[in-house]
Length: 196
Image 1 (cartoon, rainbow, N blue to C red):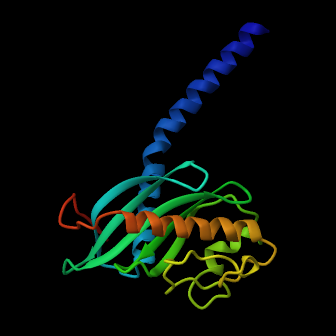
Image 2: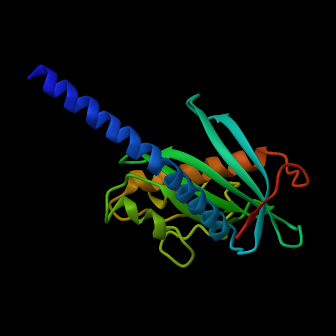
Image 3: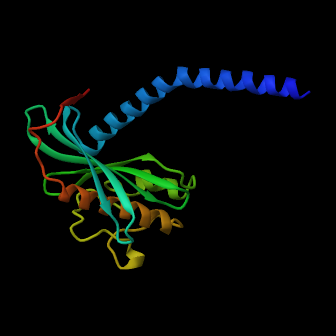
């Protein structure tokens, strides 16, 4: 019995490793495509080039190190459009990974959720709730003064019954802004990547 179970475990382990090796490349390609589409969406431009990619590490108020990926962007004529900043914060259900687009002055152009584990029908509404024209609209705002929910004395309506997710989302946006403003803009260097 022990030999049979060991044999089955070895065979199943080999099958799983083989399936993983086959699916790893398509999964990576899908993530890259989702990121490229997300950058176009948050920068509100279809013909866009990532002129430079920076990884920035900063400490939050509690001393925890945060990592941001900043995609400096240009339009087809080479004009600086600002940057898309990838950031993560801890929501109600787990990590909330957000991509936020900023113009050169730091005004929010758009955002998209790249990953989340929030409750469907509640916290998962963050993908639409803070979009332009919606109840918690943050598009067009500049987080020089940190964005906070109205329950905390701020100017943004929280998602109904999802205060923790709303706070986590706005924290991610505020942190992304701080990382973006702390990064020197030099879009003439770095490898270019055309978004199509």
